[in-house]
Amino acid sequence: MRKSFKYYIKANKGTVKKANQTLELCRILYNLCLEQRQFAWKNYHKSISGYDQVYELPSLKKFFPQFKEVPSQTLQEVVERVNRAFQNFFRRVKNGDKPGYPRFKSFGRYDSLTLKQAGWKLTDKDLQINKIGSFKLFLSRPIEGDIKSVTIRKTSSGRWYATFSCDNVPSKPLPKTGKTIGIDVGCESFLTTSEGEKVDNPRFFQRTNKLLIKRQKSVSRKKKGSKRRNKARILLSKTHEKVYNQRRDFHFKIARKLLQSYDIVCIEDMNHFKSYRSLNRSMRDVAWFGFFNILLFKAEEAGKEVIKVPTKNTSQACSECGKIVPRTLSDRVHSCPHCGLSIDRDINAACNILRLGQSLQGAGTLVPAMN
Ligand SMILES: [Zn+2]
Image (cartoon, rainbow, N blue to C red; front, side, top):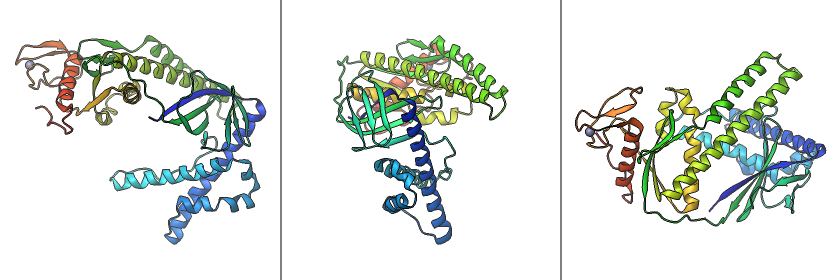
């Protein structure tokens, strides 16, 4: 299976300066490629491909020698990124969406560069990148499989990370338990299982959220363009990164726990949350998207299964008799006038998700939603 390994990296001032310059050159190239495509289309109705643009790189280097300072593979990868941006744009147009046209990247908005097989070297403690320099690598866990590409990225607080994208990573199957579970995610509890267990949002989320608000205010109080504002901005970015990391750790922990105990985990199909977004911001903030992605990925690694079920009526149907019991969002208890079942609303939803998942299991097709 494919897997990415991410590590914190650190370098001396000279290397960091060089890396920043390289990012800036990549950004300029990105914008150039975008502009060229726009120009050709506007004036000649001609579309330029990624191949065309890669083909032009040597002459670009001739006219602008500063691009010689960037590893060739990185330059090619910039062109590929522009190409991907256009492919995504056209795919979404074809699907009937209204995507934004690929945009120019403003200063500082280009934050990573990628190398494939060549242009880098891994030693015991260092990651050496051609034409940039050597980064100290904090190898918190071993890299597995065959490395296909290396990406170094700068966060907005100025920390650097290296991500190794690897192929043929051996999976680590977890022992089978023969058990299936349904989970419902909500805003009061982080998740509720069909067995009645609740996992709450950790307290530190609230603490760091308060800190976020405080630091956000501190940034907006300071004069635009001032050094003090920049300092405050870096502090804010650091807090954002901390929140992100804490949340991610929490998600990994919960996913591991679920997959250790169950072979099949049934979840709601994420598309459903699109309509919820406008409903309640804090719900979105709980970031289930991230959690479900981690769960799917960990399940693959562990040889377990995740079943996504259609979301229609999972919170309104009675998990005992299947009849619809309308209620408002504020109703915490599901009490069914038809069969008399009275349980926590989220547990009821999780039971519905479990049952839908079990009916989908092995069927390969979707069953009609309950009514
Ligand atoms: Zn009922």
